[in-house]
Image (cartoon, rainbow, N blue to C red; front, side, top):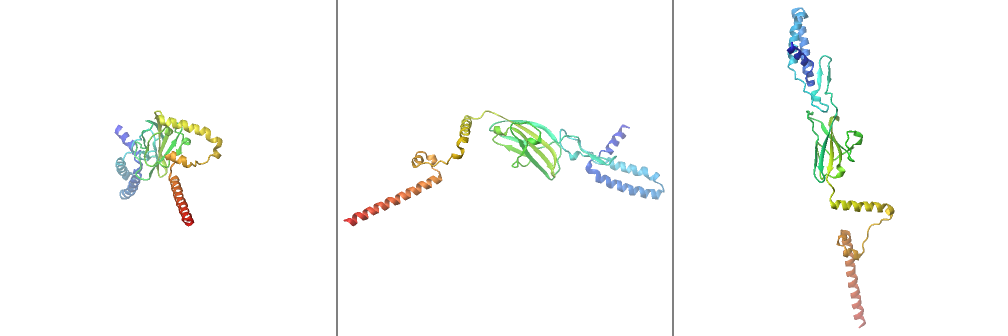
Length: 267
């Protein structure tokens, strides 16, 4: 009796992909039943044999796969219910739990957008988003798109404090979301001494700049400043110095030539 109940339970929970095979078998059984009833003169005699054949066909159908927690729309686990002729999927949320990752500043962070259940073979895409400011959340309103991130793997190097926050990866099949994964990145480690001094200087500039922001002019160094500060010798400044030197040489040559011409003419 227990074995019969176990068999009966499998009748109504075949793999969803087996529905076409089940439809063909049922159609064939219907025609066979009608032929047997015509030959034997009664459906009462033909029906038990047809029902047994149908039971054997159903028992050979692939059994539906079990749901894999904790999240995701799992099409491979979709169940087809023969009794009501409808299908159901796993009762699991689309959002996966947040995964925590701690990385030292300057190092590398990796995120793998993978799930434990089987994905469709084609038309799978990945969409990455980021919620900055150190927030740990699953609220989609906090996230902004990261168009430069593609595929199921994402990498950040070197990691900086500005990267502290929650990264989200959405797995889509033909634009339909199958799962949303979340990674909270916590960045540890103090900033370097040079970076701290740079931040102090930057804050000083920010306090000064708004006062005369419209009056700031580009720096135009004098010849003495150019000679005293080699780092100021940009390509444009070098070209300017070469032009000045050439003009000075031509001017000096012209002055000497005019002097000698005047001198010899006077003699």
